[in-house]
Image 1 (tube, rainbow, N blue to C red):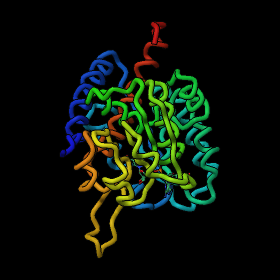
Image 2: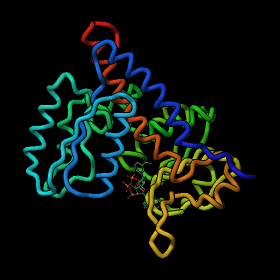
Image 3: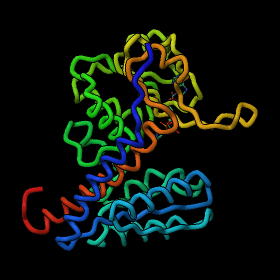
Length: 293
Ligand code: NDP
């Protein structure tokens, strides 16, 4: 069997067209959705992510603001800028690109963002709302995965879902979303005793680890839906290409549906960031006009 591959670029293009139409409708009512991005330091990967986020805004008709600080920036300056953006009614989403340099308390920075503008969904208030099954902002990567599963009509109710990775930005929110959708969820991590025992039971397997090709075909249940969140760069002697946490070649012979890397979950993440920003602007307008959000 060869798995059906989900094209994250194609799905993103459809969703971004839908987004652009909604953004244009809002702009016509005098509100242009606006995302503010803060970048501290010169991490090249972070610079690329920020550039792509800003470009994504532009293409979809959203406004963006970008503040760049040097690696040795005083955290107080960044906190003051966040307070300013929190108070600006023309800004609907605020994002601080992670990781931050050592002198920053990343948790304190994320908590300083107004929860109603926290488009990454990392603020404790938004994490709690997600946990209670009443999310305001869903973290972008798991949100993108849920969109993919929805578009592919993957049956979630009663399915065995296994997530490898328990980070705050991917693994944990992913587990909450699949749980809310009716899956029976198992979360695996670095202390899990027999990883393959769990992965082989999965109807839906989500890999979010950061270890190249660690999930091989023999660890996958025949016909399973395999979502590869990992983004890893292979060493130069192995070609230096990007690859996921799943060994695509062996996995595609066993899985029913699979996401490639690159071109799978990756493009969806920014699309969902734009979605969160747009939805934030829609809520702000509804609140301002007294309509129900
Ligand atoms: P983290 O490093 O924060 O978390 C990795 C998780 O993997 C941890 O929970 C860790 O367990 C677990 N883990 C490590 N080794 C093993 C192992 N041998 N067996 C089982 N579990 C293990 O990573 P992120 O969640 O931030 O990211 C994961 C991957 O996803 C990365 O490749 C990242 O680049 C990618 N990513 C992709 C995005 C996209 O847009 N497609 C967005 C965000 C991330 P423990 O908790 O015990 O340490």
